[in-house]
Amino acid sequence: MARSTLTVAVVPAWAEDLTDADFEAVDNVNGDEFAIEKPTLMLVLNSSGGAAHTVTVSIPASRHTANVATTKTVVIADTKIGAMLLLPDLHKQSDGNAYIDYSAATATIALLELTQTPELSY
Image 1 (cartoon, rainbow, N blue to C red):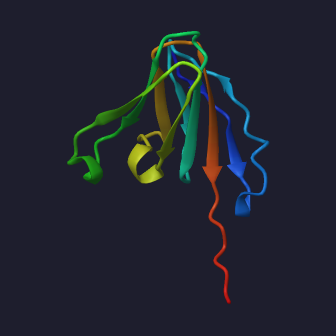
Image 2: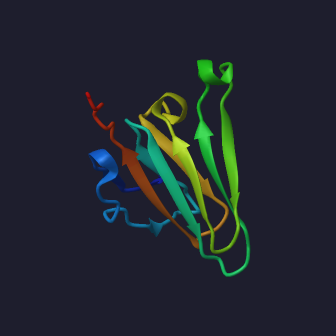
């Protein structure tokens, strides 16, 4: 089956308001994906009630990985939030998406696309 598509919230310049970030259910059967164009902060909340969860992000073969596809896995304890910064140059697959897989359904995810803050001149 196809991966589920996640919603990405854009963090406004100057990080004015993060209230637009909503945690949504994960698809631990098929995995999730989202179109990645800018650095994106991934936050995963484990609400399993006791068990640790793993979250795995796919990394395609590229000059950054010596042309070998690989993955990055993080373990998140119960009631904790795991964070990972996803970068287009590293995590974008050939279809333009980043792929995320989970060990269980009792997690929720929020994605925050980071916009570049303009430089200040003094």
